[in-house]
Length: 194
Image 1 (cartoon, rainbow, N blue to C red):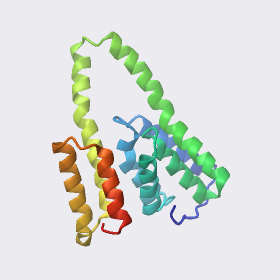
Image 2: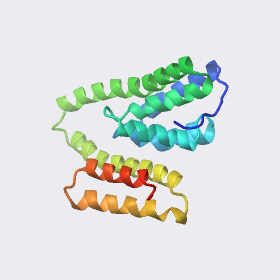
Image 3: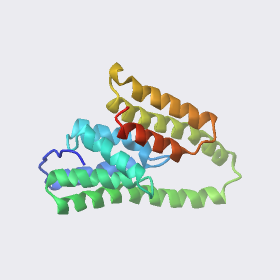
């Protein structure tokens, strides 16, 4: 994938990784991808367990693969573990990251869905559901911003910015399937045009 960063991991670092994903789990309104900016801050900027390239490649590969959106968390955990020592620590990184991101949100979602269904006619429940939409949109925009600014951080990368704007307008204003746009972007990248 990309060049690894050797890191030294002890029990405290593994616990820190697990605890960070536990806390992010409760913030992952709209899916785990909405917490990517904080994952980047923690894994790349604060702990230096991953490089920018490893972080972005993990998200790109997971999003391109079929399956649930949360697969990028497993790849981030894998890369942290691989940087810490190899395949076994890679598997440990996957397990800790996935368990951390899934356990709290799964329990909370199940309990809240049961309660919300029983009380769906209450004005407070309806207001909560309507109020969550702008929060999810803002978190997705923040994720897109982090991924875009890391990859296109200067004016010399204007084709990337232009492609981003054009793609957003096409998705917004037409009924062209997103997979066609992903394919077109992949071809442009393959041929080195962006």
